[in-house]
Length: 282
Image (tube, rainbow, N blue to C red; front, side):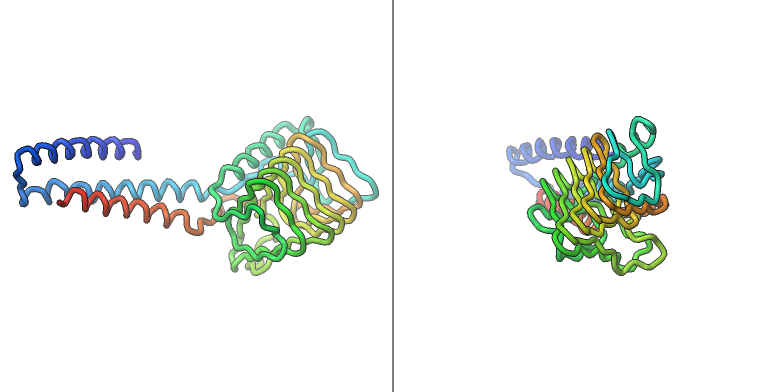
């Protein structure tokens, strides 16, 4: 649809350029017919703006489905190793033993990585921040020192997605805390950490959410994951006296919120429409 509209708009543009050249040569302008000739641009331009907006809304409404990887609290590409006595409330597995779960994990990882971010946090420490539902982007590494609050704004199933280009590291005794949800869903169930290489949860860290790492995950002594999963595509998951508690599988259909991108896109479309109107109303 968008291609057809763009093609039609381009054809009319070229026609009007030729008409303007002819008018310049003839030095005559029909003031009565000019408005009628430009009238088609209003619905066409508005149609383009709306089409682009609805396409963006559809893309922004994609949730992250873990598929069969939901069956695991810990899933590794190569090995699950550990020192001490860890407690894992949920399945433990390897990709080679469950290719479907491995495939679903890859799909979920790519879906998370492909979402349009609402905010860039590159270079900022997550500690001390209070974030609302959305998609947050780090071009390289991300660090958490202290407490990160995830404010659900009273929503039934608030979705948070963190896109991290390389590593995720949490300092000793850091924590992720969900606040202000409506109490009907499990905290952490719709929190996704997409990590471009490896993640390390520091000693005593209290973490929430589904950690999707391309390579490996290390949980240092006494780090806990409440309502989350440690899912490593290619490397190992290393445990050390940890407690990992997987939430139930998320009910799909809740959209990732769009906190401004759609309005900006629609505004750009309207601005273009105004520009066309001025250009051809002369």
